[in-house]
Length: 243
Image (cartoon, rainbow, N blue to C red; front, side):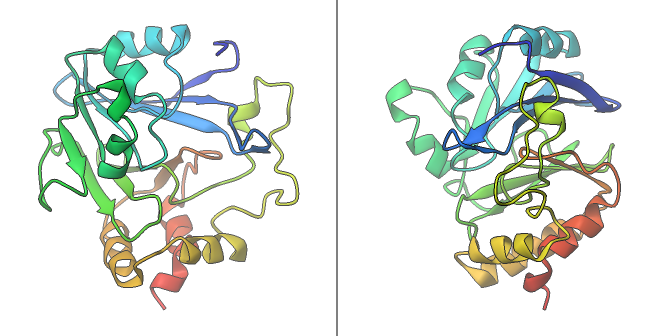
């Protein structure tokens, strides 16, 4: 994939995003984004959801040695092998449903959300907390980087249209028939969030865990970063789970 469409940005100190076009089913533009965080140890943690093209790798290598590569949910697994092959000593961690989809690649995983005991620590918890959502259809893992007050997630929250992710593309990134309706403050997102909860009680529990974190920013894989009022956006999108 072309490096020319990748938008690299330091969102805040030690937090970098790698945004680029991505269309669901090859039709609906929702954008894609990887996030790299330089930990207090000097190592780098990466949520890998986009290709490791030349410009992405060059910037990540500048940040420091990659220690952790994580998959955000059951469907954000396409580029895990690419990252692992380039950073073979990094720990590779993902939800069990994603791991099962990578069997043919012969990847070795160092952790599995959904299979490991609840409360398992992977080594990055001094900087980044995590909450696994087994009651969410895509088996999401949500991350909280306390130093920057940033929530990083894959499919739990959308903020469309994906303007930044399409800013180097010939397309506007406007979503046909949906436009900017799939964003946290719209009723469509509330219904979307409710419909993807396969276990409502588990969702209520895990939504409350995320709500207890002191974040102000949300970095989604799909759509623009919510730079402030991120906590309010999350609470609004998941309002049905608090009612």
